[in-house]
Length: 141
Image (cartoon, rainbow, N blue to C red; front, side):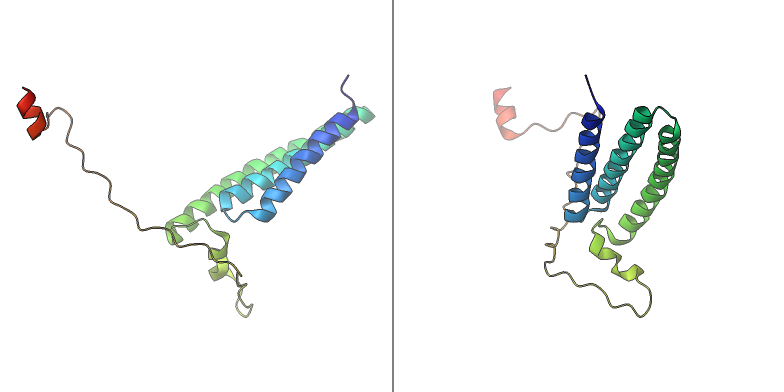
């Protein structure tokens, strides 16, 4: 039989994994997903304690958490798209330009390596035209 402690263990594991991921990663999408994982751990706690106490207050809180998480996802997606269009990166250290005037920037002790230059996509022939045979193919025919 599944008891309250099983639910609390799953919720604690979700929250712990989310917290470790949030503190160790620098990618904005990964940070957002880890924050959502922590929210889901809290939601499981609310539902488990509401079931244990036999009332619906925990489920009501979970509905508010889900509504806030859905709104947060929409705003975060728009923010990520705008930041990626501007800087071509989703690294958190690129947000230094958004600081308030007079606050010194936080300097990283370890910089991320610069990404390699983008290569051009290969040129493909249009559909419907057969490419010219190479010398090896011409000999076989």
